[in-house]
Length: 203
Image (cartoon, rainbow, N blue to C red; front, side):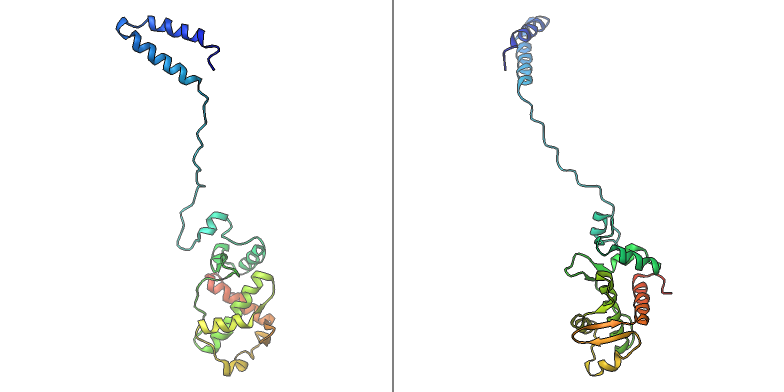
């Protein structure tokens, strides 16, 4: 470390001679200390992690939307949700905000199903679940167990009258084992309900 120190020490002595006699000792100490400090290996300080720039969140924008720049929509379902939102003139952000993409399986955020009578609400529950199924896997079919649980949540479960309630042209089939399958009229109604829930056009 000190192999080439002699020339530098001589330079320090020459500089010290330029100082007043009373300060030469102090000058020598300071210059020598600075020189020795300069010989020590330098360790670059580790820069603290800088958080990624964030946008202010609006009340309707989940944190996942900002992080991904994709409103939190998984790549596997984005094409269907984007297409559906486009057809119904719903901004993708509003469409995405209907769903909780952090849940497993993906589900809706809390909502109140439209309808004034139990029968209306029951049918609309089936439509909303079939639409969610379409977004997730491309099939317009509601799972029976999920349908029944959602009817309980929405206070519209009416098992004694279920057969007549679901005997509607929106549904191709209603089966406790196979689920509830939508007809073309049902798909149209489900898409309109989706637009209404997301605050877009319904026609």
